[in-house]
Image (cartoon, rainbow, N blue to C red; front, side, top):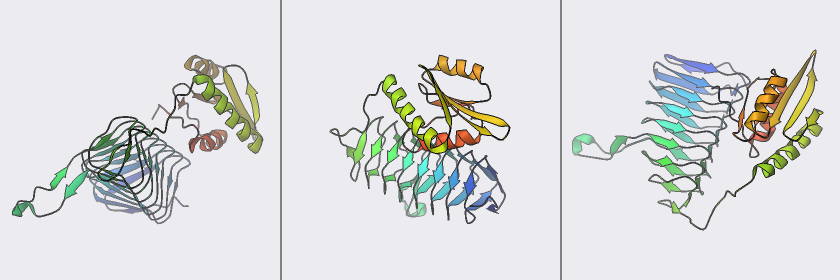
Length: 290
């Protein structure tokens, strides 16, 4: 991948650190606007951004895969740790806001506008209404979201769902038009102790694979490695107080708080390796300084 950008028209593209953009990605601006892509992002082959005056912001750790299309008139805001499969359409004609940790399977379409017959002939099927996908929404694949829809946190839409109205958090949808599946749930209650045990198991595996040193006590785990003359560190804490203590002890380290799922971004190699290993479907940490 290359960061020699293909920009057409009166717009600006700003890329974060450690972000990769395929050489055939197109940024097409019909009106002055900008696309801002955060750190650790991946934009796949053949993706197009088409901006008609609306800005696009893509958060850290987000991947937009091959041949997807992003349209922006009012604007598109995508949070951190987003994942969008091949051939998706993300339409910000009426405004599109996507939270953190949202996963959208391939061939899905999210529309914030509708337009069909001629208005001069009396057609009323025309309008632009904002769409909101809250944190951790999952559209399994080949889903369609209509304009004006808000989907609550941790909602799951099964494959080929046609979502025509808003639904609250933790709903499981299926069908056309999509309706709730009350007998299904994809989340269970998990205690802080269980989270800490899971996390430390993954950190052990990452440390062994990459040759990192590891230090652990009751409330914190720190991974470290030498990088030339420097030592890079990433620490994990079981709660906010422990995280603050760890930041005081090693202020140059990346520190992650498992209770509120946040981290202090340092853009170090060890941060990139560890958080990438966790980010798929284990644990996604959000940088609140963005």
